[in-house]
Length: 328
Image (cartoon, rainbow, N blue to C red):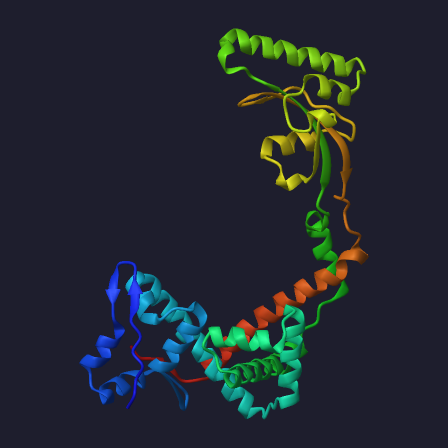
């Protein structure tokens, strides 16, 4: 029996897994890989299946995961084996209900995946090769996904009804979630503290800030004052700082900007390196979406939540009617 041995390095040390195989006979190694780790009705889950699923989901060898952090590995192993049990139960239900997926449906789904990800067939094949997944195995995975989707449609989705009243109530209770992103254009005057000035320099800085603010309140042009006094970015263009999403700004600046109308000018904002005065040049977005604009998105959200809830209930009831046993 030929076996390709691959040395694997781990940060906490170097473990050559091939040596483990050399230490055991091929028959014993085969027995270990085929060891049953769970029973699901008349079906079984082997150690090999478990390890393959862990490798598929994590992109790492199970032994490497275990060596890095055994507690995390054990938690991951438990979650994966529960997932495999659910898969076995749904596969059995697919057979019982005689759910079929055609090769054309598989190919159409793969074409849709390529369109959505903007990749060619060659790029898909290259990606699969890098992940060590044969194309035939990828097709089979798509087939099983489609079978499970049809099963969920039959057992779960067909029983879901989302009423207009429920959608409307969700909108009323979550209006803040349907406000658009606010964008603001800002200008600034920055008066930089001179490090050698000490307390006297700080007083001079505050005096200069008061002078600039008074000039602005007297109606002098912000752009002209920025060109004359500002030590900050955009001074030559009248203090123009650009356009930002409000969520991008630091919390203190968010508070100031949100309190100002368009054309509004802030008080002096104390900065680590000086004083800043902000003007809001324009504000866009932030308008609340109407119910008609939001209802399709709300329906999709509520529908998916209901699918997830009902599927969890359905699989739980299916488990209760089935025989499952985990063996470690």
